[in-house]
Length: 129
Image (cartoon, rainbow, N blue to C red; front, side, top):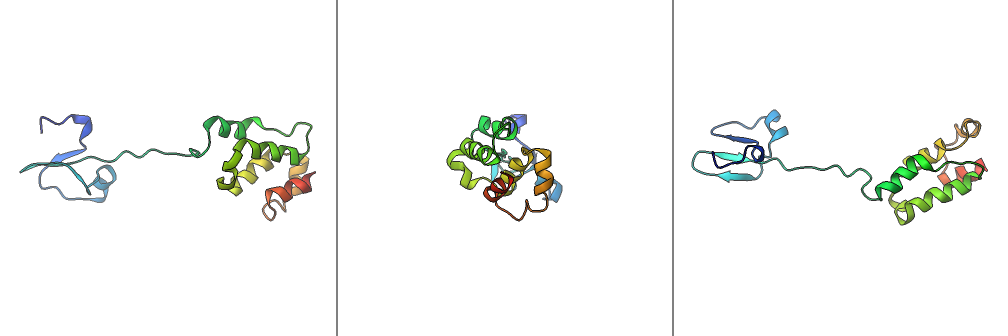
């Protein structure tokens, strides 16, 4: 046990039971180290990959920079789709529609509120024009 580095091992011990609370911190499926009296397990590291399927700066631009300005809603939609490129087909459609809707002027949002969840984003942009 003294050979193990403290931050590499989650549990070291003998005759302990697997409980729900321990299983939240320790992966009991694959032993890291076994000898006659000790079994130690290492919890695998999980990394969140939210939005990892598109470039981070593109997602930031999509969330913050694109605005309607003086253009038509269909032009805004085209710019937003261009930012995603070929990843548009795999992007969450409801999220994309909501991002597009938020960039419309408040008066237009009020007019489209009742139909926004019934139309595709392309139909919504055409109607907003």
